[in-house]
Image: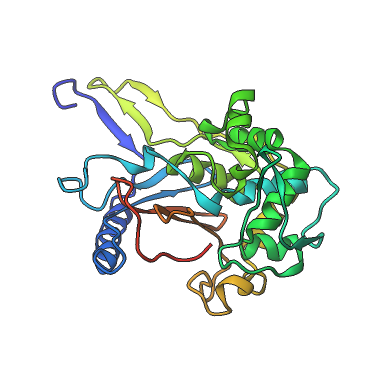
Length: 315
């Protein structure tokens, strides 16, 4: 940039970014041996402007034992249950479901590849909870109700909303819809942390999708502005009412107590924070997305070589 005489202004909050980098390193080192977790990645964004305040792609850029130079925020991984809110947002958008709509959390068989091999989802703890509200089912990350709900609203509709919200790998082509099927609501489709964080900014921003931005301004040596990001309200891809309901459901500590208990780390003292976790069945990926109207944080932990973790949080 010096040779070209360009002055570039980015959205990066340097102090925040350094804190995030330090936290990732410290927290991963705490569990590296006991849980076999070698890497982590974090996205921090302003949901109202799309500005990327911090992007930490790995614990240590210079690490050679797990390809530290790979920016995991841009790598496609399976999201586990962290994708469920899109299914619930699809349902609420139809106007025939509410957070208090009841669904039966019982053993249920869905059509599989053939009649002899039905799809039978299981909850994370293997238990059944009988009648539960959609609010409790989402906040407590129950698998069976999520699959039931998706079977009613349609995989194509759910993937269309996910795509509209910013998850580019969820383009609802016939091939993609048939490939993932009902398992997509439990994490059956790959996505990027950047895209997931962008998508959930819609919940934090009253249903508006704002494209992520990292370069705010580029000025040449003569002071001419070559490029400048213009503030935008974004595109309305979800009603403000549904965006509010999803955020409210995922900040309801009582509703998530069924799975996480009343005093989990998801309950932030003194702040109302919506949070959704996600863990793949094979324990290769663990996610957490948390947001307020001002800030959204997306976190992934796991191993670049796709080996299993030993112990991870539920949900």
